[in-house]
Length: 92
Image 1: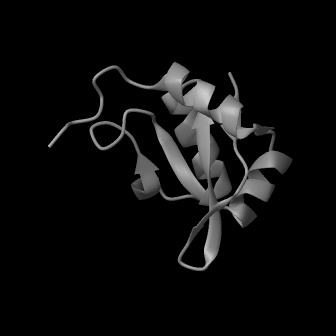
Image 2: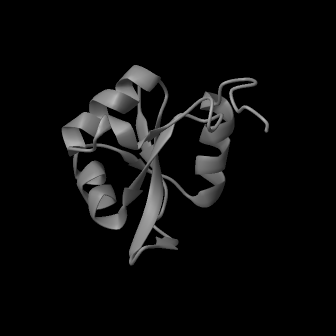
Image 3: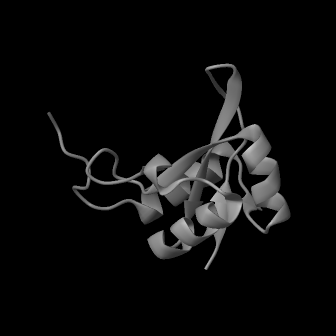
């Protein structure tokens, strides 16, 4: 199984952010814990259909050093589509 990160291009609260995804949700949580990211930062159903963590550029650098695969925007979108939970997002 693999863990993926895209480029840290999203600006918010003084940082640049990116997405951390994995082929398997358990692997995603394990890897995030290894990075020191709190489980409360997890984003998944029912709020979003693709299980992921938003991480800072600093955390991204550490993730890559720990083995996360760097992805282009197009690649990360394809991974989002592959790992998403059908009907996982609740419409309001």
